[in-house]
Length: 246
Image (cartoon, rainbow, N blue to C red):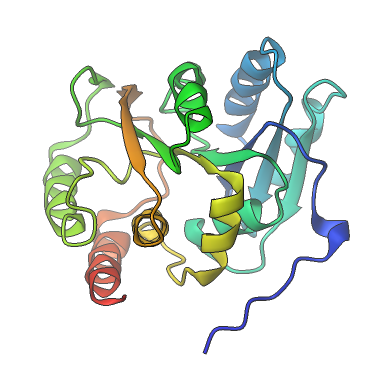
């Protein structure tokens, strides 16, 4: 039986309208550009915001990057995550947040931060999750994936329909949520790997949340930590497990 652990108040960050979580492992090269573009965008908005980088046991200087961009107007926090895996890192960012809306984007900056122009109005309209999608009308690929990744992605999408039949793309790394619901659901999730967002979305849907996809101009960026051989099979197995869990 799962016992939900309360997050100590000292680990929670000050409340804002929107908090952006960036999971990162050994991202000292790609992270500066991503944080800079994110902070530049957020600074121009009328609503309050912050950024939190979740360092997932990096062995480079990832942990030193965020402090370059921290400012009173748009705070940039850095926290650690002792559990390995992108899913574990994103969950850590969500459960320690107090923001009205919280979500994550990938450290590779593959999805333009301006996509939030579409996301925030929908969250304010009451959607539980608003996610970027590469496979809905209006989306486009600025730089194409390799053939192998395209084939693997097609198979993965077929499997995710067992749990989320109405969602075209569960794996674009740009997803934002109603903060309260995300904090309720995230601690019940078990998947630490790359299929974690399938589980998170499926659990939100099961408790009555509505998910909506928005089109995105997406680019396949070099330097991905995802390995089709190492992570692909595990992710597909996780998706099958999620579909059998109620």
